[in-house]
Length: 309
Ligand SMILES: [Zn+2]
Image 1 (spheres, protein in one colour):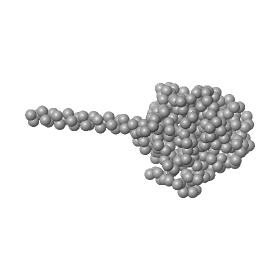
Image 2 (cartoon, rainbow, N blue to C red):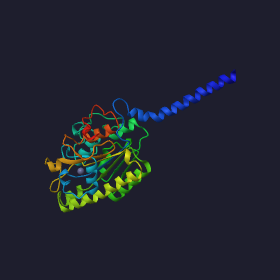
Image 3 (cartoon, rainbow, N blue to C red):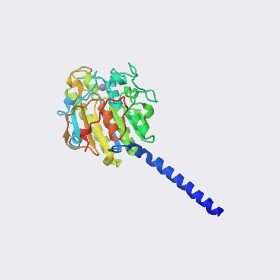
Image 4 (tube, rainbow, N blue to C red):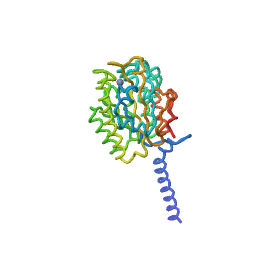
């Protein structure tokens, strides 16, 4: 009898351990699937080109980008927040709100000029990276960037991997990271064609040549996702912080204010140009929607629901 009851206790204990292990294994996906729908895809690769005005897209020779446009959904009317400058717009893209709320108001803001309306446990306004980290502590989340200013806007404590590199190395690092780690969320921020825009001018032959060069990097990143075997579960998003006019940006022309937003992959409609309003901070909300993350009350972004099947 004694042996039998000890055996029963052991069985119960083993069952308990087993179900605990199973629980922790599935909790991440279950948490993300609470209420409404589950995640649309398992991976998001966000590629940002600094200073890429929507006006340039029809004229640009960008075969990889045009392929993603044809196979996905896009708008050429996504608006930047004001001013049409870098940090304030990258912040809005990651933080689901405008400068009035996140507080980063200038081209090179490293800290908010006005107090962020809400701070997370890392002491920064809530980012999409942190939302995903909170829901999935084990998620692989990366940010690769060329411009140093990006690191102040991404909540580095929520990331698994971050590096600042020159474009060729940046692209290689992205390829390597995708193949080795199959990240859930990877952001790759290139600093061109902004430099050419400042040095030679927007809408110039040199500007278009730079866009074609950037397109080759995008092509390589798309291929890396293919080679990693996760293409069926990935959504690509291509966009920009702002456009430009003559040799600058920061102002209120539509050449400066409108940027492309291209989305392609699992669960995304194909061959659709959409005209619904889209703002810089809707990018964060759209990514949150893809991962079925609940957005914080302080966010004002709205997911671009119309692009999903
Ligand atoms: Zn910029």
